[in-house]
Image (cartoon, rainbow over all chains, first blue to last red; front, side, top):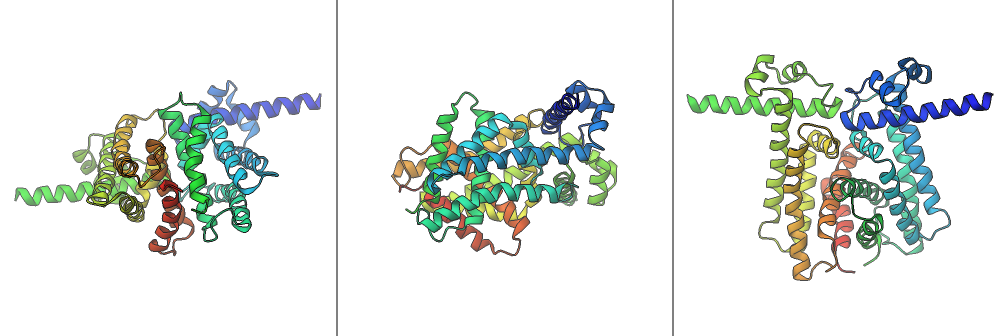
Length: 198
Length: 198
């Protein structure tokens, strides 16, 4: 009984996340009301407040949930891989993630550099966790001699994260019929040259 | 007399652009009211409506104005330069632009992939004009043999544009004391390797 209730509750939260992320990506945080979120999720407004104390709390949980999934994908991608393969796997993981959670990726780019949001500190910490996985893979490559010794690892990790987001969103918006393998190949040509020793 | 009036009008519009871009970058389009814009610009609300029929019209003009300045900077950067120098000059121009118009750059990233804004079509066209300058410089490098023949010029141009935006915003937010020359050098190390033949 308790298990069924927990499962139902997790399902409801998942639906609320999905509705909120779509609406906020479409029209922004302020324009999105709790009524909109409830309506799109097909639940009563009271159900939203039963699960989250406020729209801001829902959004903050949603950031945790979404960036947490990305960081987990990044960690799975690099696990047990040598530096060059790890970077290729990170690029693939990011493309797959954005293909699956496009609205969330868009929302992430919108919120990343805002200066007066309540969740700004949370987002910075979450983002740092994801970028740390990339930075660790790059640092391992510098240490092993695979990547240039003077690579600015921090800047390169943020560049890699940024380029993946931008290229993937462009792909999905402007060339949606293009195959993910083809985008990955084109992006890897650029990324490989970028971190490798000439 | 007419000249003075035109100059005053241009000054007022400039102040309204600056106020609007700051406010929208801080809190989003929907949360920003015409009252807020008038207050920050230090003009009466009527002055806003005297210059622009609506908040949306003001925002669309602001996009035209801001992306127009960037495209002009890009064109000036590549003029008369060989492909490799042109790419370096584009990177520098983009960093300088974002340092100067940081809020606008942030706003551009927020709006770039939204799907249901009235100004979406305008923004796509404007963005294409800026990216075309980058693509032309890359294509010239492919034609001259400076860059790899199999470079996906379109994807690389959008990647270059995206990486410049992301790295510059990260720099200004997380390492604001870092010198622009130093950021340029680190970014160029990455960008050079990226487009060059290994």
